[in-house]
Length: 158
Image (tube, rainbow, N blue to C red; front, side):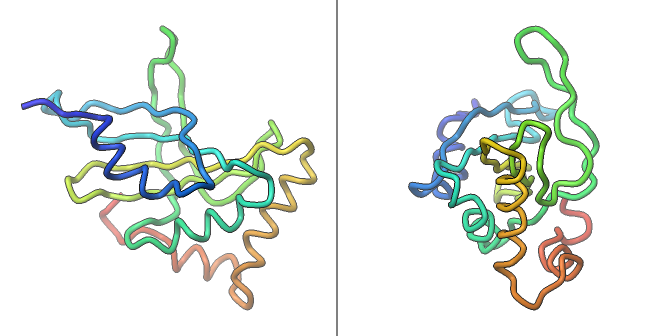
């Protein structure tokens, strides 16, 4: 029995995109059976500067999608070189490349862990910081701690 990654992405990622997001790239980590992946890591990019905060809120509204907290770094091979990706806290932050980003987690019905890195690169760090601030302002009256608590994965799922 083979595993069709394209078909899996069409079923599990494409419905999340709508017209606001595009897949930048993806990789998968083979599972113990060597057929079905254990994890699929997908980088999604917001198509315009103003949409990133609302996109992240929309994605969190899907059942079973959470912030990805405290994940160990994954070592993957890209273009023949081993690279550590992810790891640490997936809450909204600003990267050194002026990108507002967050990492989300979803365990799909077939048991595969879907990790979504959702970002948007801005021309200046201040614009990226404003996007992160705008994300939090969408949850009026809710502190970041309460927000993280609301959107943390149930124990044992991640």
